[in-house]
Length: 349
Ligand code: NAD
Ligand code: UD1
Image (cartoon, rainbow, N blue to C red; front, top):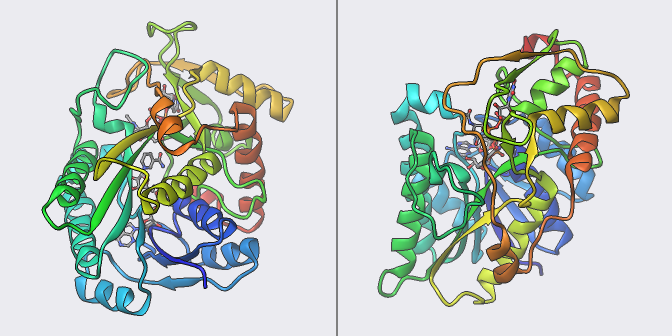
């Protein structure tokens, strides 16, 4: 019988791709997702993609009693914890909402997991934990100094997981994965990012321009200290990211880490500017995208770039997909999603 792995947030953008990769690697994912930012139809599409019946519990991670029942019914030594709120701007306006869901929710989940026998926890963290740094690339030894409540919630949970794993007699070990800029979709076009609210990120905004839901892209600043003056990021294909979770979990369950807690960057280490992303889309679409130069966006940094070498050493992972792959898959997914009425014009305007 294959090993059960609890996946919180398993119906979300990244979690759904993790579920596919877990199935491909022979694990049995058990999804816990309260659908606060996912559609129920993701489950059907995941079942089509993986060709198997999947288990989903519509449970909030803050509900300890419900989590205990899930773990009694689905015992397993692996937990991949992705469930969280993730909008930086909203976290500044409503910090307690973020500390409640991301911090209190994770504490409840880790407590129930440890009491049920513990095992390995892979935690979704973010490059946001490094805050507004000006040195690149970023490596895991750099100080953790988040500058917004969302980033702080991730940094706090890394500390909680580290302390839990280091406690005398602890049965849990932890691995925190610090994602850079996830992009793209599964190449089946059955799953991908499905933003419920108006998106703020570059990829979904470009797609909206390409399909005519917006008249143009505003490039936020051309006077940064970067090669072409526009912002530089480390975009990582969501399937590469998902595969890293499976490799991380396997290494954790195999006892490959000397330390009870480890944090790893997940990026490609390859910098791409806003202009380069726009050009890659234009190449894929065979058309020019309407665009205007605008002011810098408040809170933006010039460059965000990972040193991903620690992940390669620790879990043997490195990204296999590049920017054209991300652009192609994001575009294909947007086409399919619009056909099914997922990404309708009313949602996005
Ligand atoms: P997402 O919103 O698509 O997925 C999160 C899922 O968790 C959703 O399906 C939502 O319904 C569920 N969820 C939220 N709160 C819950 C709760 N209390 N109980 C049960 N389920 C709950 O987001 P995503 O982009 O897939 O992100 C997944 C994780 O990765 C998050 O922890 C996020 O902070 C982290 N992360 C994301 C990015 C990014 O750019 N997408 C970057 C860095 C880190
Ligand atoms: C943003 C979030 C970050 C989150 C990440 C997830 C902010 C300040 N940061 O980061 O918390 O983890 O998304 O992927 O919200 N750009 C434009 N025009 C646009 C949109 C974006 O020029 O209409 C530029 C941005 O200035 C930036 C780059 O594109 O240089 C990437 O932007 P985005 O996709 O929003 O990612 P981040 O800014 O890295």
